[in-house]
Amino acid sequence: MRLDELHVEARHDGKRLLVRTITPPYKGSGTVAIVEDEFGNADKLGIYNQCDSYILSAVPEGSLLAIKEPCYKYSGEDDYMVSVDHPSDVILLEPGDPLVPSTFRCSELATEKSALDWRKEGDMAFIQKNLPLAASWYDLPPPRSARPYCVC
Image 1 (cartoon, helix red, strand yellow):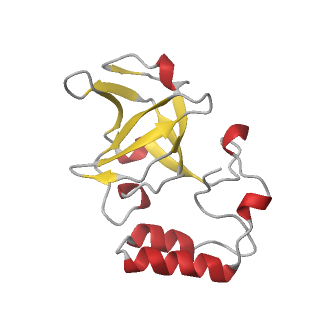
Image 2 (cartoon, rainbow, N blue to C red):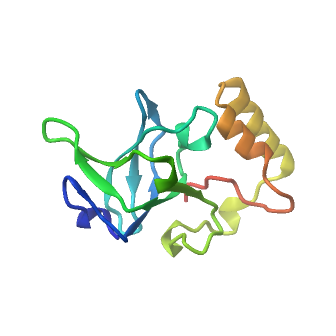
């Protein structure tokens, strides 16, 4: 489904929404980020009820997400957002996942990183106390040569 097909205050049963985060997350009572779909539509996404040790509690910029039965909610004074209230309604997709639209796939040139580069990224995330992101950098299985959250 496309972002521009969402209806306000409706849960879209039997549908899924594939998006990529295009901003760093804002953490408050939940995590809010701007996302885009493969057609270039953009909107806000609010993710709630995720434990602090899970990567989606910080949803790094460039994350590829599949949202099950998306819900589009009114969030106050001409403000709307896609809302994920249950942990099982959103999953983080790997760049090579078959669900990832071709417009979100990284070119071979953009994804070349060495193990040392991965470790440096993990170290930076660790220093910034973003433990879920650090773990995602350290957990990459060799010999995969893709950044975990490629912004192409």
